[in-house]
Amino acid sequence: MAVSFGGKIYSSSDGGATWVAQDSNRNWFTIAISKDGSNLLAGVFGGQMYVKTNRGNVNTSSGSGSMSGVGVGSAIKCGYNPLNLIKSVTSGFSSVDTDGIKPPPFYDKFYTAKTTLAGLDANKDNYVVNPSGQWDNQGGLAMGTYVFVKDNTSGVTACAIIGENGSQSRWGEISLNLARTIGVWVKGMGNGSNNHNVTFTFYRK
Image 1: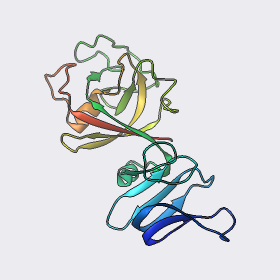
Image 2: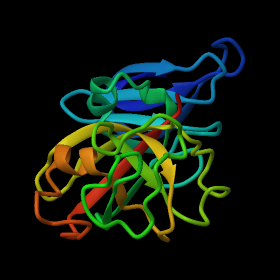
Image 3: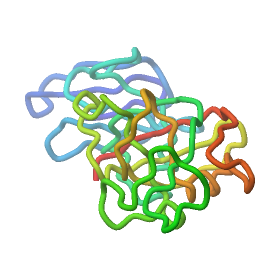
């Protein structure tokens, strides 16, 4: 792989004898590729870092084989490998999970004394709840998957993991500690929601 400042990304499959141009003209200045060649990270001078998360030609469209502009600094902040990006989901903050807190601080219809990922405490740990019915079709989002969480209303961010299976149909349920950390929950709200817009970005461990 190679990049051209003001030009394109180039790839070669024959040891450099021939090169194929990919993506659009940008001020590319750095590039890195995973050992198996499936993930690629490239940087634009004065701009974003871009990630391709599966094999195939790099292009600027969304979907399989595409380069997606992401906050790579966010991944590094949490100690995540940017090349391990899985996907991002934006949803409204829906409710607070209190599992693992003994006793729960307020009424939680679906409270359990233990979390799906053993040993977590919603009052101390930052975790995200995996929505009901999406366990098998979320692209490998297993318990313990790293999550970078951003409240798009305030811009506040936090590092978390997937730690619980839930009953809701969409992403948006998070632990009490995570809700406090990013500022979407304050004392007195109980299990209520303020519908802040939140983005969840998932990374393989």
